[in-house]
Amino acid sequence: MAQNAPSQVFDAVVVGSGATGGWAAKRLSEAGLKVALLDAGRKVEPREFTEHLPEFRLKYRNRSPEIARRRPVQTQCYACKEYNYDWFVDDFDNPYSTPSGMPFTWQRLRVVGGRTHVWGRQSYRLSDLDLKAASHDGYGEDWPVSYRELAPYYDIAEEYVGISGAAERNPALPDGKFQPAMKMTCGEVLLRERVAKKFGWTVTIGRTANITQAHMGHPACHYCGPCERGCATFSYFTSAFTTVADALKSKNCTLIPNAIVAKVDMDDANNKARGVTWVDRESRKSYSVRAKAVILCAQALESTRILLNSSTRAYPSGLANSSGALGHYLMDHCTGGGATGELSGVNGLPDLNSPRRPNGIYIVRYRNVEGGPRHPRFIRGYGFQGRSGASVNYKAPGFGAAYKEAVKAGIDTISLGAFGESLPRSENYIAIDPNLRDAWGIPALHIHMTHGENERALMEDAGTTAAEMLEAAGAKNIKITTRVEMPGMAIHELGTARMGSDPKKSVLDAWNQAHDVKNLFVMDGACFVSSACQNPTLTMMALCIRASDRLIDRFRRNEV
Image (tube, rainbow, N blue to C red):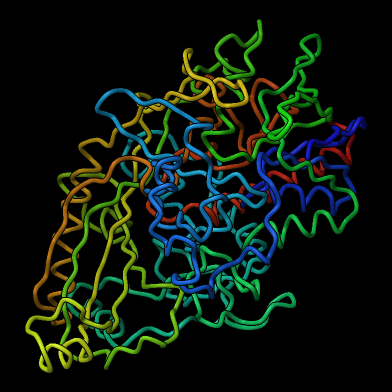
């Protein structure tokens, strides 16, 4: 149903309601500011959750070719299935282009809450090894914020979200405010012990936004999975039912769904943003919302797309782009390196009805760390995510009774997959495609990105060391992969509006405020200076909370 735009002037308009937009709306509205929260998608209702629905109850048994026809890019995402495909964008309505031979997979949702409905929930802090990486190895730029400055905001995010995990006292991965850790399987405990003894590296349980004890009125995770289809007990963090709900509860936040933002509107005479223009997804009519501050949290590429589409006479190459950095330094973690193997009876017999732990193990970065040797082939490093467990062995050899017994006996597997740092390079960029528009007439993106030699060397090393660790745990039939997946496969798009102390090299300052336009903010992953190798969402939340609190203080001092 089409809607009418509110006529009032808000204190702030927040574009996007995902991991960061929800936090910005919550923080500002609970402080008494009037907030308009715009999202390009519709609301999701709990009745849509299908985590308990078996495949045979689906119309196409989760095998419909029609889904892939309209969503050929989105179905490259593990989470886009018949259960929930309509949460994801239609690729034909939401196109983008890439150069020939340079594929990039951009996986997107258009619902209130965004990708927090389907994210992997792995939640790790960055350290000064990451935030001040340039000082360690001379490549790129340091972040204009230190771990000491960011740590209190990590605390706020973790205590609210509910992060389960184990403290390890490893300086490369700072500990946080954890709920009780999920238990490792026997194979994972064996790997942890053998790796620590032989290599001195840390294997820990994943730090995940799944609660393990009652939290904020919600019960602990009951291990039903898969989480990307929703959670009837709200036992993991989804912004639509946490931060956004809190913002609406304050009575100071107005949610406008199905609002596809086309551009930021400017008061050129005063060099100030005065709101945004958006298109109703259903009626395709255009509206405007006015506000004293504009905050973009639409997702890294979407936020920068809005800025690129907001060019003015003063900013002909994109709003707030006097530095020329807007759109550049696109990053996505490199993946593809790792190893799998088989263990002998460590985890017991498989059970088709066993609990499904929505988490795995994590191996903390050990290459090019503080006090350690520098690798001769690459800078920065990688971490591993993985798991071990017993499963039914449908690929067992033989036939008849012997085959049945082998199937039931199962197979014990163990696997490790690397996430490596993607270096910020100016030649990895996004721009507006002059010949391509989406279904609402908004110019679409051209994405130009490749992984480089450093990323390839990271994945080669990751495959080798993963195999060494599995061998130390006693695994057999080890298979190594050293490939580099196409950019976008990590679903960790970062950069394109990076922060920095020098306005000539960056788009934003240390508080996520545009250098050029003082009431314009970008509080999502677009602000990242480097990617580190850890999953980025927790850091995005911490930065957003910090920036929001700074903006609240400025409002109180009448500086906005």
